[in-house]
Length: 75
View 1 (cartoon, rainbow, N blue to C red):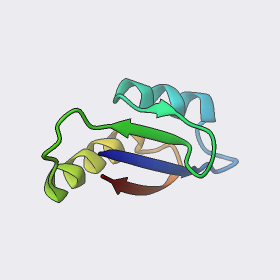
View 2: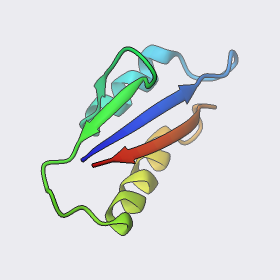
View 3: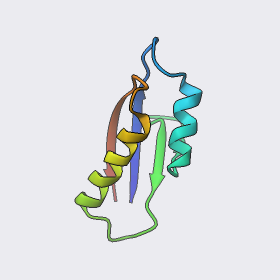
View 4: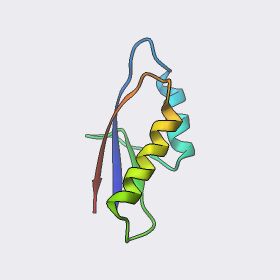
């Protein structure tokens, strides 16, 4: 499974490079195309609750940055 994140960065928010650094600390990789970042799950039995808990961690990590996020998880 992969969780993709598309970001919307505010002009008066945190720099995109800082947001990228924080996401990489959580295990995301940068991508090109429809999404900005991807997180590749190692566990094959990922449940919706696990994904939601992970999204909570991402929100906490990016709190105060002014970033809006869109998450998509696919198997």
